[in-house]
Structure formats: structure tokens, C-alpha cells
Image (cartoon, rainbow, N blue to C red; front, side, top):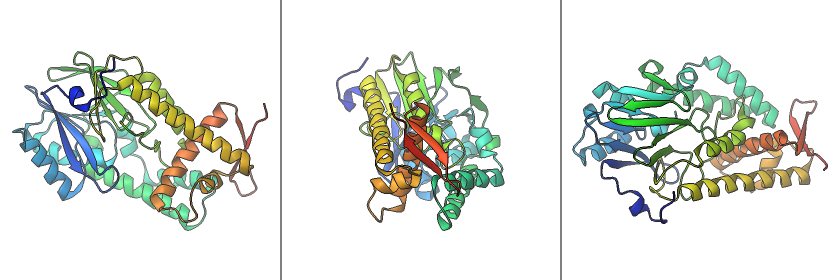
Length: 335
């Protein structure tokens, strides 16, 4: 059930410690969590680089812990601001490492296959030339970085959605919650009434639907996000410990707000298609943004637009065809 909208009330378990490290993008921090236990548990591992490692070590030290004390390392998803200190912890403590099912194979993916997937998806969305090559290089850089931060062979336990497991003295349920990242998992401790939500459930904003990135399957991102919220709804959660933003107690209300935000993005994409049909994904993006958007804003809006268009097509509200250049073109289906 929801508690009053009070992050202090929501964070009352003194065995759970928030470890906050700075990052160079909004909201300016990422949060990992230490659970005190005879076998200490770390959920996520902060940001990469020397500063990230130093800050995470200092946050642990504030609670009289060090990297070598960690017995269990649970990772919500393979983004660098959650994997950042994973190898440092692994090298120091040799903990049991748990990651969502799919992370291992994603980190093991052949770079040539990833490049082909990004090229196909970027071309179909309307990107050309340097924009396509930049998208490929960004995806390959991310793969190389994540492999350094979390070598695939370091994962001990691949967690399927719905799997219950014991981490030390805690019973944990892994919930598959894609959308922000396709392999993402939340960790529910039913006996404690808490959820570690990673980047899927945050107050007061919703993290972008990055899912697979600009790769095969990108058009499923919004449907994945809706499915994630369906899986989360109705659980006994009193406190949510997110990867960004404050700890909060308004669990069901935040699920509802996040779903409404997806709904609004879907309707915005539908309106842009009806105004600009037959519209490519890139044209739908351009219709929503100023003439010279920041590259990060352009990238995020493209991912969100692709996910919204896929949802609209799946719901039977848009039709899709390919033009002579292989670009997807969307039109509204008349009622």
C-alpha cells in the first residue's frame, strides 16, 4: 500500500543504506544500496571511472564497510552508472554476482552483429550518412565499456523474471522490467515490503525508454515498458529504492504517473504522424524538437518516438510501409 508522500517516512529501514555517487547527466547522481547483513549485499555499483570508484568507496566507508566486505552483488541492468564499480567490487571481494537473464548474452554479443542491427534500424528510421555511423560507434563503445565494467564470465547467477532466490539472509524476487533497458530487473524483498527499482520506477520522473537502443527490437520499447508496469502493479511494496531520485513510498501512484507519461508520449507521436503523414520516425522526432536540438535530446527523443510508433502500430492505430529508400513511413488508420 502507499504511504504518505514523504521520502523520510519511506526510508525508515536503518539496515538499508543509500550510496549516492555523482554522474555528469541529469539528475546528477546515481544510487546504489547497501543492505547490512551477515553476508552484506550491494545493489548496483555506481558510476565508472576513478571518481565513481572513490565516491562509492567513501559512501561504503561512511557505514563502516569496504569493497572487500561485500558478499552479494545484485545488478539491476547493464548501464554504466549501475555497473561502474562492479569489477572493482568483484576483484576486491569475489562476491556472488547476480544479473538479469539476458545480460550475459548481450555482453557476449558479436560486435559485427550489433553494428548490422544498428545500421538496419537507423536506416529504417530515416538516418543517413554520418548519423548512422555515429549511432553504430556509440553502440560499439557502449558494448566495449560494459564488458570492461562487468566481464560476462564474472556473472554467477542469471536471474529469470519471477525467480525467487536467497542472497544471504534475504529472500529476493527478481521481476523482469524492460523498457528503460531490455534486460532490466527490479528486486523485491517481500518480507521487508521494499523494492529496488533501478531505473524503471522513479519519482518524480520516468527514465527514457532506451530498451535495446537503436537496434533490432527498438520498436518494442514502449510495449516492454507497459508490461513492466503491469508486472509491478499490485505488489506489497511500502518503500521504493530507485537508481535516481529520492526513496519514496508512493508506489502505486508512481506506477500510475509513469504509465500516464507513456500514454502522453504515444498520443504526441500519433498527433505528429497525422500532421506529417506519411512520416518517418526521424520526421516525427524533428516535428517535436527545435531546429538544432542537443544531440542527447535528439537521441532520447528518437528512442522514445520509435517505441511509441511501435506501440501505435501494435495497437492497430498506425499502418507502416517502406519507401523506395527503405525508410519506414507511418499513417493513421481511419476508424
